[in-house]
Length: 262
Image 1 (tube, rainbow, N blue to C red):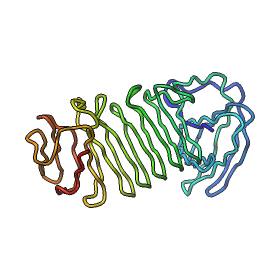
Image 2 (image 1 turned 180 degrees about the vertical axis):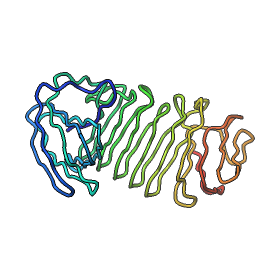
Image 3 (image 1 turned 30 degrees about the vertical axis):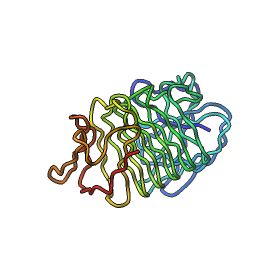
């Protein structure tokens, strides 16, 4: 099950086009026979593919794989007109992947679907999902949806973990990932191997002291170590290891009990 979004000069050229209209809170259902692309000409809609939701606005193109049952619903903003098309040539590097309602296992280094991790958008939906972009790709937006998910981050990815008790491993590669944990008790493992420090600090926007955890794996670091420190910097918290900033926690405070070393 796959669906996704294309943008900019990579928008596919349709070989067939039909125009139809839906209004606010009206829906359109279809089972795709072929690989298809929908374009929103005005208003806003929500695509529902197997419980995985994707909003689309004017100018957006959404890709749906063949043999999928999906629903398009107009939002309160009213989607007055949508252009339906069958794509003539959609390359894997141009689309964004949607996961299933079940447990997805996605690795950009070994792509078995459309996700290669290079400037794409990934929605895994519900389920206990695993996503690895630590070795391949950068500049993607990754949303793991609901469920207790596991994500191995890489470089400059916008990460949204969504609902659930999620685990995020973000030590390797270049770092610089803006991260939102979402609802649930999340584990942010900033450091997973001795010497594996990201080139740029990762930024966590919604760390909750006493609920979420900042973790360090396979390391000699500890709260009493001279190579580890954290400090309050205005409303934010700066975390450093071996003399280098590795993470910034925005608009929060922390205590020693928020850190785990293993």
